[in-house]
Length: 338
Image 1 (cartoon, rainbow, N blue to C red):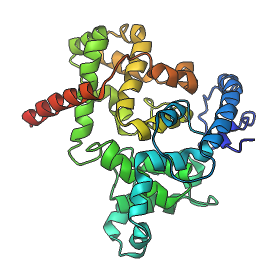
Image 2 (image 1 turned 90 degrees about the vertical axis):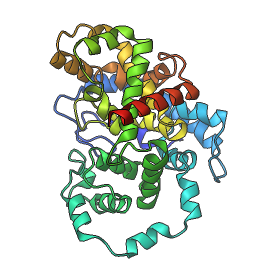
Image 3 (image 1 turned 90 degrees about the horizontal axis):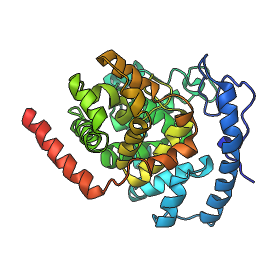
Image 4 (image 1 turned 120 degrees about the horizontal axis):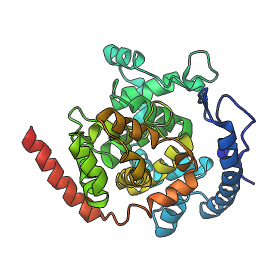
């Protein structure tokens, strides 16, 4: 028997989802319930298999079996443990016992804390609002404060989702450290060189795999950063028109923590390939931008299990060595441009 929040049938027309997010006014309950009735059976089967795989406790060791399981989705009750293990966050926490507790007891920079407080929390999540019980606002501020990320676009959302999944302030801190320090290096630095490099890499991959879309972008002089930056910055649900559904984002994060940033290229290429005909209908820059908003909506991204199967088949081969060469070339070009 599974206890995962995800594997419970959704309450009819519930205005707030199991993670505390308010559903938008135009939320398609009928389509979601149709999807979830099928996905519920998948979640239940996967939860039983995961419980067998992880029985006995202990650390999570990377393996081909674990990789296969992760690609098929990690049940909510195991997510924190799996993410901590495969990302290296657990190892870092174990090597630094008491580190986060000492941070909490140390002096605080009032100006830094004020900057965090005046930033944008998770406005559509009731658990981060004053007056909620329990209120996770202080937990969010602490994690952001000790990672020293202030008012960076998307960082509060990432930290918030980590807190919702792990239900642990310390684990969220170490996962955020793993994400920005090792998995997505230089994405969130002042120069954002890693982020800019990977956006250039995506452009090169599209040029190779989907040349008609690349030609459309070139013909309008449109930079990839204008249409895909949010995909790279936070892969966040709900917060903006380029966002993906929550269940889908969490499934992507399952793979991101285990396999690294290459997953983001797979997601982007799959979205673009699946909607290539729609994108090619665009006749102006605003039209292209609107098409890229459209491709993150609808049943293709809502049905997360099928979507995740697609990202490992549709883009074709993406070798680590090939990505590394592209990154080196794109990085050099960006540095030369100053």
